Image (cartoon, rainbow, N blue to C red; front, side):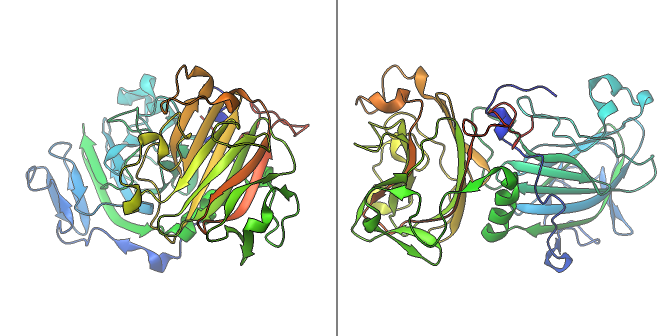
Length: 422
């Protein structure tokens, strides 16, 4: 398992409620045990796909079996059994894959990863593609596979043992972009017979997703907003209010409020909720004076991209972007009025923004020779400063605001803080 830098270490967790499972009555079967309703691909390979006694059987050939429904965040359970020499897997949102294969030394793929076992994210290159332990049962026995996906974060349990721990699944089809927000489930098969049964899914809503994301590595974070008053904060706090434990910019007011403490290398996480056309921003390494987009290291946009009034935005103005300098990937916010979970990691000159489990910005501001907006951004080289919120007259809300300061933790450093595995 290799490490590719300090930011990689912050991308997944070795802690958190990974044994969490939705109540069983919230799961719905996506195979009815009788026919291929809700699936496509079987008809193109009808000679290869059959159903017998509630079990899908494939002889190792034909098209993949693909759901006609696309899924966003989910918890997927199924059982499978296979034969010697087989090689198969489960595509999540149409992307390869949670690997299933012959893990015996005689199987022919021992030297390319089969010795580590099934369940790994086989096509990953940047993040881990191996399961943490070998949990495959002998041929002829049914294996239970559970796959939970939130954003691009995947956790896998094989036969009730955690083998993949909150690892990003890379976009095999375009590694320069994150995974699509929604996509189908696909049963891959080639190289030998495989049987599938008891396929059921629980679709994870935003509240449950936020709870799971927030719990990962939570012990390392310290709250910087008590939900009652503005202790620890300065600036025009009278332009903000506290409503049901959340910090809210007053309608028609604004300005940048900021922490009394300075931070150099840090990770901050919070939930936010946008009203229609809502606009705010995150002040990163803010010097307490001036415009955070220029005088601070940067302002990270917090914005309702869907609003008609913003239809002519520049790329660098959309949510999550380092304003004026680096655009973020779009399409990962929840509907207006829902709470989103966001984490921002700032190390040296690098910034990553992870929104609802998907990294939408990963950039090095020191590499910028000319800003996209044509403006000077003198603050982008700052190595320390406050964290804050840059209100723009809209009642955007923030809650559960927590921070991990690598520079302020005497027992930890950026490279040893493992909210992530690779």
